[in-house]
Amino acid sequence: MKQEIVQMALLVRDYDEAIAFYTQKLQFTLIEDTVLTESKRWVVIAPPGSKGCRLLLAKAANEQQENMIGNQTGGRVFLFLHTDNLQRDYENLQQHKIRIIREPEAQPYGTVLVFEDLYGNKWDLIEPALKN
Picture 1 (tube, rainbow, N blue to C red):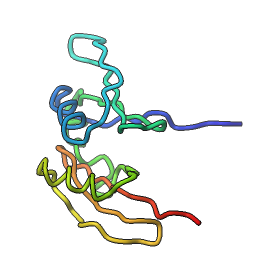
Picture 2: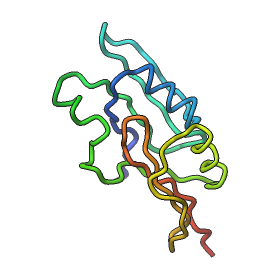
Picture 3: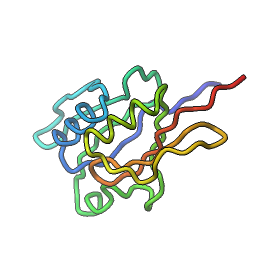
Picture 4: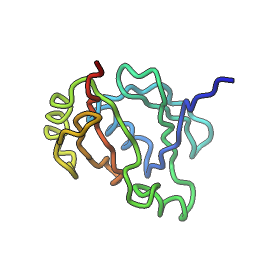
């Protein structure tokens, strides 16, 4: 048996502001933006070079969902993004004035920092340690 998670939903306030943030500030790729109804779109993004899980930007449809924007995990780190160059990406985050929650630090598994996206979701940015 083989299974894999290929996509997960990320609640957003507005499609266009979310697309702009992720593509312009984090350099994600816009994979798809299809209008489904007058108020609903199918918007998929992914980190550059990614072959794994993609994010479906899901516009909150009611008050309960709106209240969860930026807090889908109760304040814990929500998403884990691997990079091949943490210093490059750290400088990009600083250049775009993205809030850094925890500065880069070495851990047994690699170097990690924590940042917040435009809605307050916490992300781990990790440059994995080289394996021998």
